[in-house]
Amino acid sequence: MTHTQPQRIPVVAGLLLAAGGGRRLGGRPKALLEHRGRPLVEHAARALREGGCGPVHVVLGAAAREVRARADLSGYAVTVNPAWEEGMGSSLRAGLGALGGTDADAALVLLVDQPGIGAEAVARVRSAYRSRATLAAGAYGGERGHPVLFGADRWADVVAAAVGDQGARSYLRARREAITLVECSDVARSYDIDTAGDLIHLE
Image 1: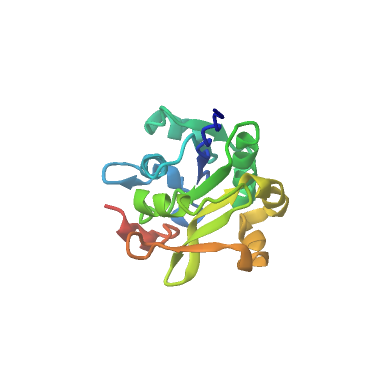
Image 2: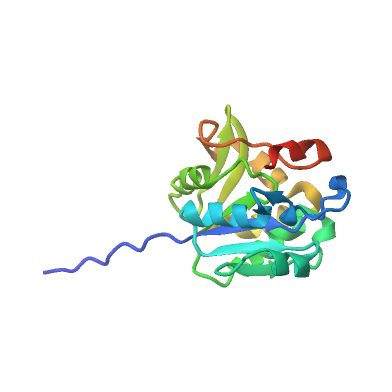
């Protein structure tokens, strides 16, 4: 009788980019903006965990020490990006670099300043994982948004393309045909908290 190997469940790590200094918010670090009485970084990290990602890595930058003091990040891996002022690209590189030595098959990337995207959207995009070459993203009315899932085979190229504030934008634009779009507009809203006017979204 032959024993077939049990299929290994793919490891989809959560990667939360939470390093921004909130330049257009008067220098208030986005991770510490309050939402329902707790810092945004806690809500976003929990959305990744409750959406089925694990381990969850959080990339901090601006006011990292204060964020660690005020936010409950126990149970999450924290990476501090010393070059956070260079823009989101450096945080994406730092986060994927931290995941490089793990057994993660994919990274699901969420931004700290999008509190309208919760666990349901995370779970939906996570379920689009098929292989280490998977490329998937949440979509809103057919337009690509977050979260974004990168299979591990794509990380090196994503890192090479992640410069300035672009993050993975140029990488994704060049591979539009390869992206599996996962409609999330019925369970999430894709606004950003970028300016003082956007703070109305926070409760």
